[in-house]
Image 1 (cartoon, chains in turn red, cyan):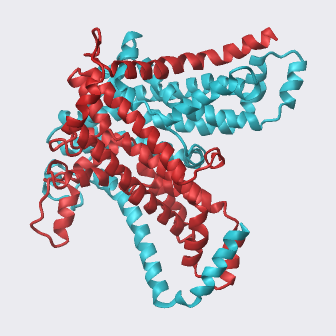
Image 2 (cartoon, rainbow over the protein chains, first blue to last red; image 1 turned 90 degrees about the vertical axis):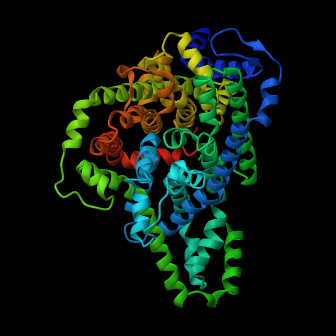
Image 3 (spheres, one colour; image 1 turned 60 degrees about the horizontal axis):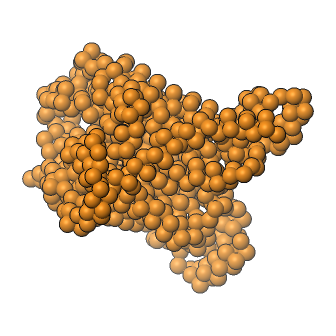
Length: 291
Length: 295
């Protein structure tokens, strides 16, 4: 008995140690120092709720929250529906469907930093593909410095990820493959068109996987970092600021770690809230998640 | 299921005659347009960078839509001689392979203990470990940096390995735990009667049987580690620890106004990811489906 207990301890301790060190302790430090004035090195000075009180007046913070929410909406309203639509199309097995599915996943598998840098070139006002393509299509005087103009920066940052729905396509197709084909066949025999089968049979059965996809996509865009750090730097002004980048700037450039950690607490709560609310909205079940 | 069937039948009854004809043609045109768009947006930016990397600097500055007149490898030669590419590649490989192997080794043991033994607190421990899937490490980036500095690991590959492991913790525990649950206990019990201890039953019986789960979790941890930029930015400084994905940040300054070299450096950075994807495509797709709910 004690021998097997000893073994269990041996099996668990390394994991628990690592979890405590890089996970539990940082959470505790983040929450505790969010109530302090702290440069990240010296002694934190307790200042109560001052850091949180300063948030509503902080333009950069407000813009970062606005951007996260907007990106969350775009993820749920464009990114995921686009992926689901492509999955429904590929599910009809058109010519080259396997190839298209594979290719669609490629942008999700290269480092996000590489994708960001590629778009730095695509949107480069001098040598970039975007402007010259638009000019070639007849808008000869078109000129935009995509990542650096207030009117286009947010759009440009969004374009870097919004149509790369490979993971959504993949998991939706897996779910479609699990739907018994008799459902589709009997509906077709009854005179339904393929489109009606998609709308009335497939889409309702996709609720769970769409819920999972929306949760993944929304929590992912809350974590946006490379796509702004390497392109706009959060600018112009703070137009494209993300919460991750703001925390990074505050902690490493301005040594305002107490305040950075208060924003960390906000980001953590936003992520949890998004998860809980979306899981409830889509009635994502345990069985779907543990599939 | 039957409910869905009747609902579908009812609605098709109403709109039976609306499909087909011009609408169907328009529909299939639209579908192919969407697929063409997917191919274009997924490939064109990278292909354009690859094509441009074979141009001369004058050609890059000339027209984005041109084809290189005399495709040249000068950019690649420059990129390879003026940066420490092999070193960055090795750093990426050490950090991500190291993190993957260590994560499977250590979290596999925990997953096994939690799946096989029902002891006081076992469910609570599992719940706490899994709950970390809902909380990413990004909010804690300052305290994590502090912990790594305090441990004296700043600017070492160990720092990256530890953080990448923890990033992979929930997915590894989840996938391995649920797989161990599906393996019948009989074999292990027989081994136990023969006097094997927990370590021996784990390494000789359970782990080899769990190979599909190990592959599924391993691929996800490896890709996540290989693609990381943020923690390399936070936790490393010198060229000796610089990873490939992080090195991208420095190319722009190093090769400013030398576009072919800069673009070649980017292509070289992409190359390992593409090779890994082509080689492990099936496994990667399986892993992504299985681990759809990751961090």
